[in-house]
Amino acid sequence: MLKSSLLLAVFALILNSCASSKDIVYFQGNAIPTTVYEENIPTLQPGDNLSINVIGSDSRAIQPFNQVGDEDLKTGGSGAPSKSFTIEPDGTINFPILGRLKLAGLTRDEAAEMIKSKLASYIVDPGVTIKINNFRITVMGEVTSPGVFNLDNERVSILDALAMAGDMKIEGKRNNIMIIRERGGQKTINTIDLTKRETLDSPFFYLKQNDVVYVEPNQARVQSSKILNYSTVISVVSIGIALVSILIR
Image (cartoon, rainbow, N blue to C red):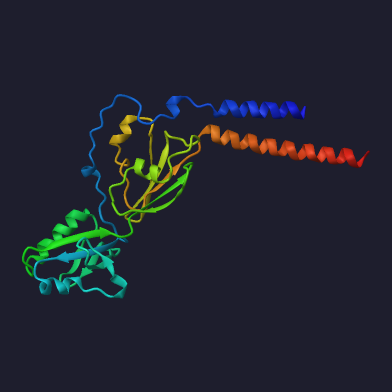
């Protein structure tokens, strides 16, 4: 009886482990994607920590805008030390001389252009570089190497994120990947289907700072867990029966 149960459990595990190609292959179908990254560039948000470096031909003119302390010894695009700023809950930073600047809602390039325009009153032909120091994403679930990934470049797609995590396991549910995104203090849960080519047009194909990607286990993975638990119970019962048999001899 026990042997039969174990054989049935193994047989069920094999059946549930079999997945058709439509459940595994990415981007099926004939749709022609049209969405471009420029339509989905991440915007700056409260809590973002920025390194901002002002560049100009007159070192004395730019010096007041690049004042740094020991806690600000980060490197800007020019290789010079740059001051770091954390965007406050109201969406602003307090920039030297220029005062309060509202950066939340702007892209990194838009913020740099806005600061350049204000610096033009003080510096001839100023340049500004901005880097998001805490741009990170989290990948969890049925992937090879889940974790938190800090990025130097905010252009990151769901494919980049999965590649950094070693790709999805075969047990990962490819048609219902969850992306948890927070904006304005509110979290939203969104899903995309990587088995469909239309996903390349999704506003969630490109990730934003602090996104969490969660890959659900597919049905085969869930069933295998149940079967393994069942097999464990059978093994324990078998050992118990064997011990009782030895003791009552």
